[in-house]
Amino acid sequence: MGSFSLMHWVIVLIIIVLLFGGGRISSIMGDVAKGIKSFKKGMADDDDQPAPPVRPVAQIEATPARTIDGTATSTTEERKPG
Image (cartoon, rainbow, N blue to C red; front, side, top):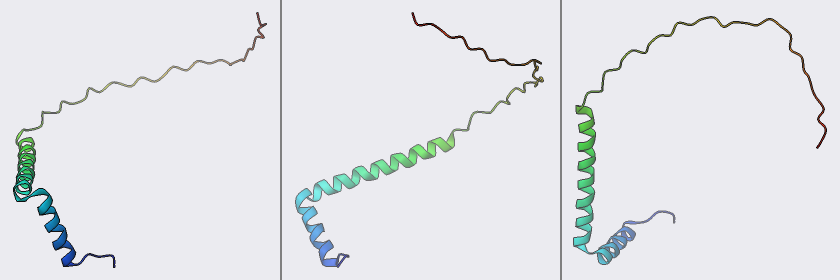
């Protein structure tokens, strides 16, 4: 019940040909083929160009952080509205 038989696909194909016509379907397929060819050509062009050389990253010498000795105190001031 869930799958289509061969006869269903033949009827669908006939309806598509009647709606679009043979010339329109062939032009659509030609456009698809041109798109695939240009995509493949674009991918091949990317492979032909070598990647730019990578320059090494400058190393920054690490210096130890300074620590401050002391105690932290919390102060709160009450503000009067106005």
